[in-house]
Amino acid sequence: MHRVITPSVRIEQTRRRLARLRAERLIDRITLPQAGRLRVWFPTPYGAQLACEWPEIRGRRPPKTVSDPTLARLRAGHALTLTETAHARIQRD
Image (tube, rainbow, N blue to C red; front, top):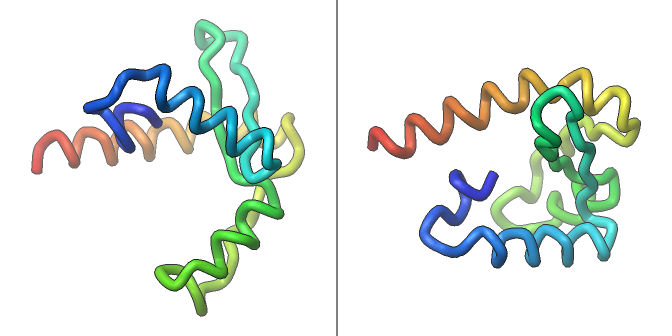
């Protein structure tokens, strides 16, 4: 996530931002034990609902959120593939 969103800043700054959003219950995370303790972040139902009120997203249907950590872990492979693909495309463009 750091490489896609803010690759030009130190990772500590991204970690602080994510911790703040998590403290406000807008996002949550799971840790994948098989992947070297890689963390997977996802919006909470409240965070997705709040984001849908932003002018850029208003009028769109809220995404299905993952509130169950087990389900998030099962979907993590797909999410990571999408993120890596987006990162590769950004790097190319």
